[in-house]
Length: 90
Image 1 (cartoon, rainbow, N blue to C red):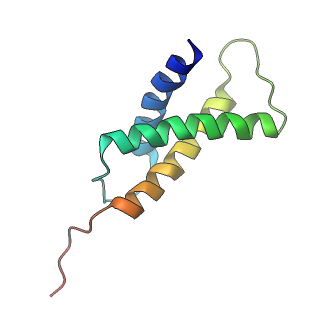
Image 2 (tube, one colour):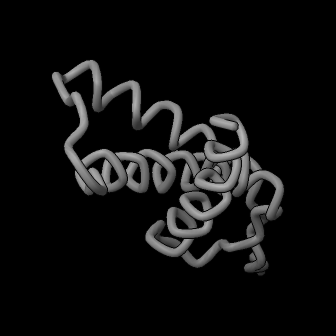
């Protein structure tokens, strides 16, 4: 059941990361955005626990903000690697 939660959270976090990520090149495929979101959730939770985060009762906002930030970085990296430049040079 936990893997389904990570996948659903990864989809949401990936889309939030894509929204937060700056840049005009937004031609990253949706499947890559979702993978970046899942990676952001997993890496973000690892970073959170590595720095002493042990959760709190209710919603742990710090953990989710770290996951969104990591997903945004992964989306920016993915768009840099796979993005196509739409401007033409004369």
